Image (cartoon, rainbow over all chains, first blue to last red; front, side, top):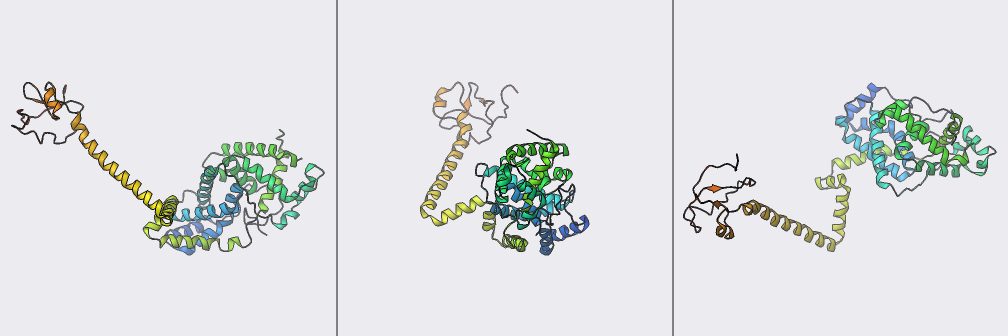
Length: 214
Length: 160
């Protein structure tokens, strides 16, 4: 089963990758972008397929709602296609499409402010075999009686308590494994801001989930 | 609050759980096809449909008007009312500067609604705060009913 965040099978590593998931060469990508600009839908189809899982995952982890993630991910790709002519190539298409999706999602969440709703996607069966997660639920701690689904629910509830920007940093770094540099480019801020937001967000999550952590 | 790195390590392990949240099976099989279909729909849409796609609220409004004749009637009345108000207001605004002009030293002419001021020397004086260039003298030709002798002069606002 693939990891929705990266499109790759999780390797059981404790550390999130400091570099982004494997990306296609920039030149090849730019060629696809240029072809898509000229109306080649097959080229755009290729671009969508490359990033659909990562974009969906980012939006999903921000909204905790499949329907919203579906709409926002689709709209992000549609908006990207419509704005393709304005894409100068100053950043990679990957960063650019991420930025579109992130801005769209943050705007959506601001409008939805007091309408938080979770419709959590099912957990992949492989989650039960992840050594880290097995350790988390089997330790002799107060969380020993809790199942993965309940843990998932608590985790998502805690994430929803974070501000959009803090949730985004945690999602991009700790869930999707993007580097600070990439997150800074996507969020259009400096690396120091990313680091401080990540620290603050983790502190907040730590407090919300203290019953489930050692 | 304990913020030691090993505590964050536990948190990061817990966050790994998020990576196992999956969309419905087969969800990505047709994802790009759905996007391309929507793009094609947009490309072949009429201008009105395109407007609706770009402004969802407009689409909802048209939907309501389509389904409810009562709402359509009320909407029509409101739009007509706004249009009439606009016309009336624009006429009022057009006349505004003319009304603002006053006749100095000739109150009887002012009361009569005269739009130019005739001084003792029969020279036309225009208030400096009036900037309109409307042809306010059109009805005040020499020998008009006001009996004032008006002659075209070049003038500038007072004090300039």
